[in-house]
Length: 373
Ligand code: PLP
Ligand code: COI
Image 1 (cartoon, rainbow, N blue to C red):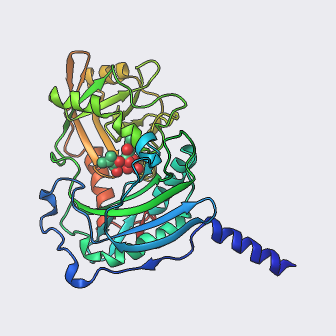
Image 2 (image 1 turned 180 degrees about the horizontal axis):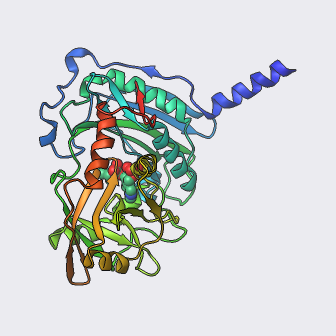
Image 3 (image 1 turned 90 degrees about the vertical axis):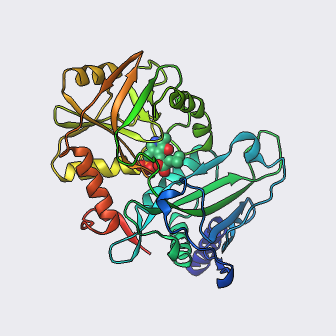
């Protein structure tokens, strides 16, 4: 009886989750040459030789998992994701460390967040440990695409889309999950130079009860008008305020934000409208381990400006996978500009050096953030 039950449970699990994948390697002669100078190619425009793909439907669950040469998809024009934006994604990185090993930064956390996005968007969850195994196998196939110049990495984009062919507004009964990989330098060409930020009191990124706390494409599409107006006005990014009072700081561009006020790190608390960043979480863990004072709380733009004016706010920086840490040098709010002069021995630099040091193998990974392939 027990054996029959175990067998049924196994059968059920294998229906829900794919358990193995096929690998079709591209013949050596057809493989492309990875770019020599990754820093000079625009972010996210060149892709490695292979990709991971799997399908989902109601009958089979996840199935047809495979690693195959990178290729285009063909979609029916009615494919659901093209009409209603049923899409989620992740952004994580692999590095070639100073011993030549390929390592991933917190893949488990990224795949966990992908499942949170899936639940919110009524999409099927993936088996995170299976996806991590598939990703590591994909990385083995495309190892030579992981760049080794300082400041470079292989940016990994797990993506899920609804693929049922219908323009009816329904929960899709078919999905596609895939992983593509792109060798990248820093997201922002300014590198570590302080950026200029426009505080938007006109547009918001997120709404109460909405989807701002998950990684779904529509959030980014909806942010482009504000971003392009900021660019036109001479600023690098938009600082987003809360959607109700337009008073509390939420995020900056596609990054979380930290302030150093009176020597203490302050970051907006997660209230449901902010994306819980893995880099943000790493900065919190690092700060607590080092005994630096750090608080997660609401912080108003008025408090920030007052602190910049009286000199108690000494640093502002954004955190995210693509940029890692991006120093902020200037804020514009309601027709006035406020400058922050960060000291060279700043928290911003220490945090940047520690996180990138752990990623590149220069600093011991006491946090267990690194996963070897
Ligand atoms: N906020 C938004 C809106 C983002 O898209 C990202 C990037 O993923 C982040 C914050 C930073 O998150 P993470 O550190 O996990 O990359
Ligand atoms: C990331 O930091 O991974 C991001 O999401 C940025 C991306 C939108 C380019």
